[in-house]
Amino acid sequence: MAHEHDEKHAHHHEHDHDRDRDHDHGHTDIDWAVMGPLLETQAGLFAPLYERAMAWLAKERTDPGLIVDVGSGPGVVACLFAETFPAARVVAVDFSAPLLERARTRAERLGLADRFGTLTGELPDVLGELEYPADLLWAGRSLHHLGDQRAGLAAFARRLAPGGTLAVMEGGLPSRFLPRDFGIGRPGLEARIDAIEADWFARMRADLPGAVAETEDWSALLTSAGLKYTGSRSFLLDLPAPAPDRARAYAASWLTRVRDVYGDALDAEDRATLDRLVDPLDPAGVHRRADVFVLAAHTVHTAVRPV
Image (cartoon, rainbow, N blue to C red; front, top):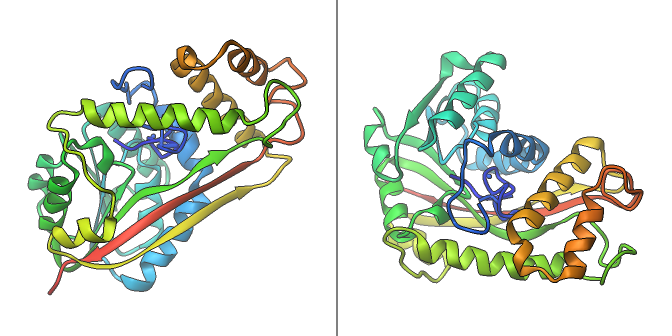
């Protein structure tokens, strides 16, 4: 459960890239297993951003024994945690068994299997099956897939050891791949996609079981869960033009998804522009043009369970 570019946000333009994206975009049912490869590609591309976030977390929490990745998807970030904290055991938690199978395969390939476990089930209830409280619980663009986010945070907090840290990655800025005016169609295409995504995200939230509207004041929400809010910080991914091939491939896959899922909400000119952008044979497409880049920002909010 993560949203674009994220790992799961791969479906939600980063909104989890959101994974946003993250967080399927025309209806709110998302086939996470089918999205596995895209989620892995996106999370791999975003690894520098996650690594900077982990370095920030490591300053506050130097020696976690157990790290739990809530809504881990295919385990890219969970494996990065295992590499960043070589003494820690990491448990990847997700409702998707196929994604967790990808996570186990990745951990084995990286030589991390002896410190890596998985837990399959619906959040947040499945966290009750953890054998031990977590020293660091990470929710990377997964909380927004729970209808009642406040109750979800309270459940996360209950699984923390005294002195343990909860780190919630939510918010930031929409990703950008192209200049405002890139020479075909009407300028400002990505800003128009942002507006469509915002509407989609609101519908996705409203359609969740037990949906509760919540003001996204993260310090207040974390405090309401009985935790001591310790800060928020945003982390940047900046892959300037000319982008490497894997960044181009990610841009192409993301734009293809936008076209296929949001197509009805776009006007004919924007749909035609997207057709050209994702055409591997078109010189104006993202596979070939020189001005493609990836620029994104994700925000992490942290709190500690009082001792």
